[in-house]
Picture (tube, rainbow, N blue to C red):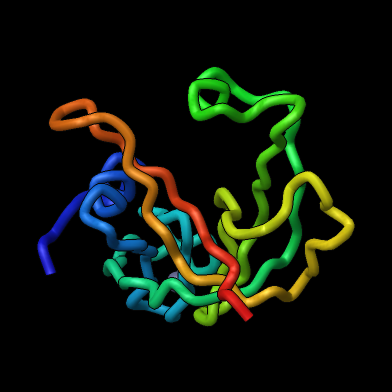
Length: 140
Ligand SMILES: [Zn+2]
């Protein structure tokens, strides 16, 4: 594993490479996602990167109608809401992400506990490429 600083920038760089990476404290084994450079449980700085399998379930969600600009460019907005949520990963950590494959127009049909798999949503090219973390509902 390449040694990278335990920062949000490294986290985003990993996302560009389609890896969801957290950090684990070598001292007490606590897992952090998004990554932290220092363990908040034992204050150790001895961290290592760990790749998440990218499987989880829906823990909480919101259907969003007032979209940020980048989402409006994708056609989201008042008539086409999108869903963001918190995903509880198999590893036991939670992370917020776009939720795909659910009907954001009918949020009452979206179920907490829905099994989800990771999706990497790339936008832009080359230097400007950014990657959004998303999770997609497993088709039944
Ligand atoms: Zn620790």
